[in-house]
Length: 248
Image (cartoon, rainbow, N blue to C red; front, side, top):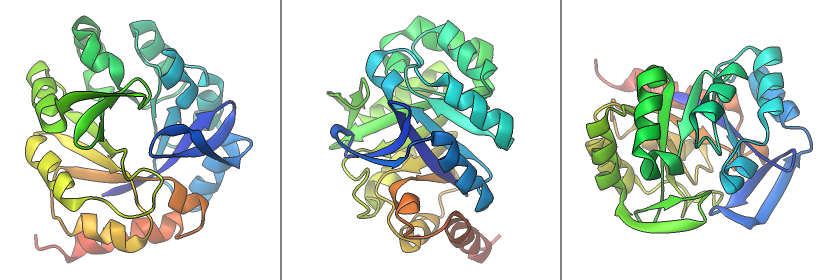
């Protein structure tokens, strides 16, 4: 399992929200690059970058930050936020993204999803963000009546194989993941997924690793790293220790 430090960009700064609420925002770095550089210096092998401005407006607003991070730090970056057209996806990939994360448009525009799958299938991830187990869209500003597992099943029928699952109810709360919901998602996913939401301690990481779900490929962590609850190296070590402890 891989630890993905999160860099959420809003108004040019690295921030964290609480439960997806844009009105409850903490600025941790004035320059997102500095956050990225510190995570890489601490041992990060991948980064998760989200353009919050893009998620709200429907088009990427911070590709220049992505360009600098990927050009100077040379680590793979998965990037999302406002990728709702094929040109936006191409721009993100040209800006250095290793993989692109689709959200709202993956559910609302089937033709667009099919086009991205056809052109960039191996580099596509779909974000399944939930509140109360139901799909949340448009930068977490709208919640539907669709259950996460049903959405995953439909997307897989169209060919999606990689997901980010975010439990928005726990995001930014540092209170740990809902392991039952993670297991339900793991049962639904036929490919691979990365978990995000509520990680506050290395024990939370160990608890996820102990689920022994082979399709759980990684964990995204933001606030806990910014607040020095543990380091990137300590978090990655916790995941690797549990992996090594599992029987072959």
